[in-house]
Amino acid sequence: RSSDEELFVITIPSFDGTDPSPLHKVYVTNVLSEDEAKHCLNLAQEYASVTGCWEQPDFERHASYATCDFPITDCDALDSYLNEIGFQDRIWKQLSKLYGVKHTDMSFLDFFCAHYQAKNDQYDGSSAVMDRLEPHRDGSLLSFTVTLNDAFQGGGTFFDALRDVEPSCVLHSGGVVCPMRLGDAVLHSGKLLHGADVVTQGSRTVLVGFVDVWRLRPGVLTIACRDWGRMDEAARRFERQRGKSNGKGWFFDNTRWVTSHSC
Image: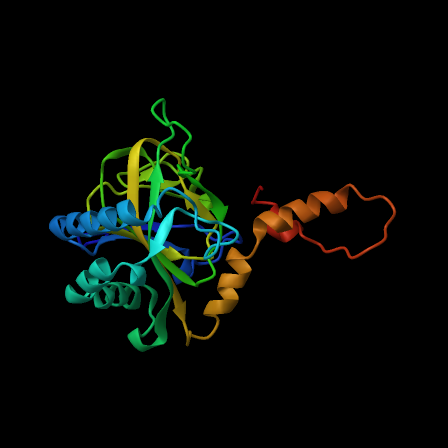
């Protein structure tokens, strides 16, 4: 926890023992008041009840890792309210301060409201609700998730690189970051392997943003590709190559990448 009582910092160790880059930091900070988060939730629920968008994953917008969601721009009431309270300026301010990028160099690649629903004994299978999201990497360099409700158990954002780290006040076992205070945001590099942990009871609703960065400090993108490239794929490729015996085809020495990482 930093000297700022509203900010929690989780540092992911670099795989090669070098000093962690800014992209190794996961932050938890408050960006909405409790009342603002509740109002966003009400607007989102009203829109979802009319459109049914939380009953089926949106494969049109997220082909590989679809979620039950809707784009913020599709919901006029929520879009207007977030503009009214200056939400974008708040997020830009935090990302700028924590990751060292300018406001003018950031833009939304996507901004949406996602919903996860526990599949318990009351679930009748009438809709394709989601209770989790498998490990993936975002198309953006930076990403964030804002908690809008607390009527759930389980859930949160898990990070593969934190799964063996000792739990703390915001980091649960299995590398799950799950702030329960309404309006708290989890800020991180989208290139970290992450996912949504299973919701075991109730439902979890969040604002999710993918943020493009147009101009970077020298070396930042190189660090992102080196440290957060497809290590899971590299490990699988390495295992496949070890099983080959004919010596043909393209072979790469992946030992530096996979000795401290598993699939």
